[in-house]
Length: 372
Image (cartoon, rainbow, N blue to C red; front, side, top):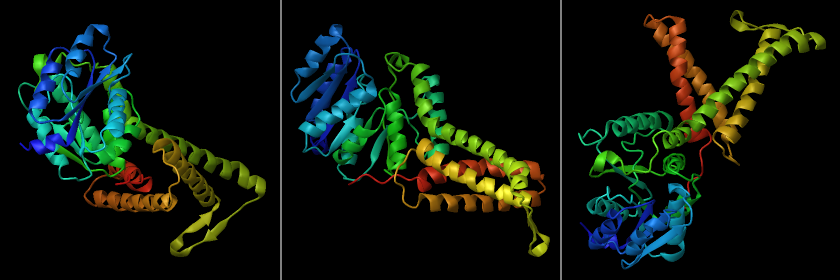
């Protein structure tokens, strides 16, 4: 392994109520060539002060302290701010967990990736097919990986890994990502996806000591926080769709049964191919245009939460037209294969609903890439 790469990187370790493994792990990292190590005591309390004093005594190792527990996300960002202010000459940051499950060799592997100087988030990825992986961890990670792929377009074999690496140029970006506790790490993946920062899995050793009972991850509370992050924008997307469908139907009926009679509107225009344009057509198209404008603004401000998007309205219109064309073609293709209209429409429109979400998330309401 290249120790020069280790000398140019900084190891950042958020820690809550560590045991004797942490000082031993720090010493191993130093032996492996890592010159800079930052540890954040996330409100562990006085009983754990001796452990952190032992860590603080190691050369070129800094211990930052929170008086109360603030969560892993806050601890990481405390470390990021310290690194930005005090370690300007590093190549990048490697985050690792305090329980020693991330080996020195794996940290060195990520340090070598940083030497390439590429803008990317490197993710230490465990092999969940091994026998030593607890069943709940195996199932949880696989489900999360599939859901992330469905909503954000990239399959990450280990979305919950704490071993990550990125260039120092990405520090401001990482520090600005929202999140205080375990959900922060998932928000980083989503933020990188939307900012088009490549996420590159790097295979690492899979270590679970004592069935992972030393973890401070609360299965119910923290899993809820993580999935609320993953599904949050999609749930808002569905809510926006439902609201706009209701508005569309309400307006169409108001126009047809109340407004047009009051205004004396009575249309019946014959079109080519035996088609016609009447009050019902006008009501439907008028309601659809208004609901589409509402949907665009709800998605922009509440779903994807972006501001000042140039060209987003045109991209939204292009997406709507494309989805409509694909829906028509897809339904016809399935019906030609002998599938009923009802089943074909349900299947095609369900798939295209996810396609529409992905196009809006990645293209229509795309975020500007961070500065290099």
